[in-house]
Image 1 (tube, rainbow, N blue to C red):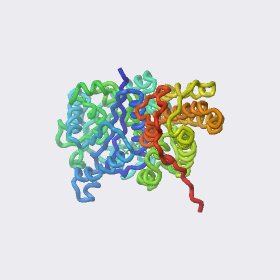
Image 2 (image 1 turned 90 degrees about the horizontal axis):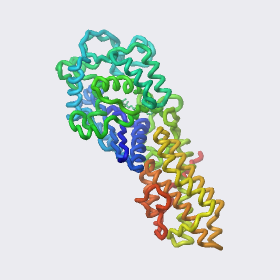
Image 3 (image 1 turned 135 degrees about the vertical axis):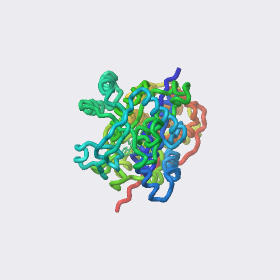
Image 4 (image 1 turned 180 degrees about the horizontal axis):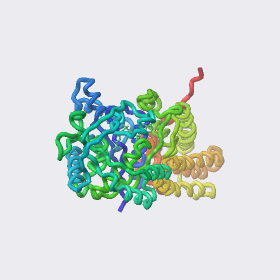
Amino acid sequence: MPDKFYVTTPIYYVNDKPHIGHAYTTILADVLSRFHRELGDRVFFLTGLDEHGQKVQQAAEKRGLSPQDHCNDLAPRFTDLWKKLEISNDDFIRTTEERHKKIVQAVLQKVYDSGDIYQKEYEGLYSVSEERFITEKEAESGQFREIKKIQEKNWFFKMSKYQDRLIRYIEEHEGFIRPESRKNEMLGFLRQPLADLCISRPKTRLSWGIEIPFDRDYVTYVWFDALINYITAPGYLSDDKKFKTWWPASVHLIGKDILTTHSIYWTTMLFSLELPLPETIFAHGWWLVGESKMSKSLGNVINPLDLIEQHGVDAVRYYLMSEMILGQDSNFTLENFIKRYNSDLANDFGNLLNRVSGLIGKYFESVVPEAGTPTPADEMIIAQGRALGEKVQSLLKNYKVDAAINEIMNLIRAVNKYMEVQAPWKLAKTDLPSAGRVLYTATEALRLSAVLLRAVMPEKAQRVLEILGAQNSGLNWGGLKSGTKLEAHPPLFPRIEIEKS
Ligand code: MSP
């Protein structure tokens, strides 16, 4: 039975203009999904949009639209971008969909019936921009905008009840919160007493939300609503069989900015529902521009569409996945982008394709030669190729996507060196079968790399496999068939020349 892999991204605020940060998490989920599919696992990949809350209501009012029309108008900014970025999600959830609203209400009722929701009068500081109550200390930090003092009756979720259980759970489950530094951050946070979570907003203040089923004067707090998307989509309380297949999620991929909501709010909600917790919550770092996080309010966002337009989807996906060490922050610069493209894609990967197809064209009429009997030098490449699938698999288990890509590129680099030393263009003059053997070995290693790189560069790697007539080949050595006619092709990764001013 193949393994199952259920991966989620955060559901993005519909009001935001998608930038490289949003694209990063979504591409990461896509790359992991594609790798798992390539390795034979069953995959469910979920992404979507977070559409309730004050900011959406206000933005809609400003435009003179109903909030729903406003959301419907904005949603394609994300769905269109995901299409362009070759995102292969299995479901796309919007929190304004009936299927989701129903489940949020059922969850609220369930948690209420179990005694974990109560009402109380509350006075506190409220940040409109963050849409949550904040502490005095947070207010003083200067990180919150539009702070108001608010006194009102609200509904609360008994989060504090689960504090000790959560601490024990985190300590006992290696790899639950990753990376390790984030786990320690959360355990640190949990050393302070945990307050209960305010999960309602009076309709008099905010109407754009899901109505609380046991008190029609209130709507649900946007985070309580949003987190539930992870169980709505795989069929919680609507499709038992589907839900059993997919839940618990293998991994919630998130940025480090939303670690608390996932590892504390969400986990305690799941405890209350008596559902198992996700296997992993992985908080990746931020894409920075200079010293600052990329964000709309700072006006320093990199628009993924511009990059795609100029350099192609696969180059953008490749850069984002190989450049960021998963878990750490990374700096986005166009210069680094071009450097990595030229060295890895134009010089290493693209060049190997051009060389083997050029030489097979010249000496073998573009027909893949016989593999022959391997020499010790060939054996080295064959061994590296044979081991690659497993190496990549074990790196991915630990979410080391950048290292997995580097491992694939190491094979490509080794083959380029092997070509230099073996010099099949010289061999061809005196010993054609040996030249053929070298070219077979090099092309087969290229094919294997392309099979694995297809997760990262679905278009270009697929194109390489088409050129080699090996679209449906797998990860075993020998998938390239001698006698196959190679397709003619222009260079797939032309160098980017930097204009000198
Ligand atoms: N709607 C909530 C999430 C609810 S999940 C149940 C939200 N949305 S968001 O639109 O603000 O998106 C946040 C996510 O976008 C981050 O967690 C991260 O995955 C991604 N990124 C946004 N800016 C980013 C960077 N500058 N760098 C990397 N990723 C960042 O929060």
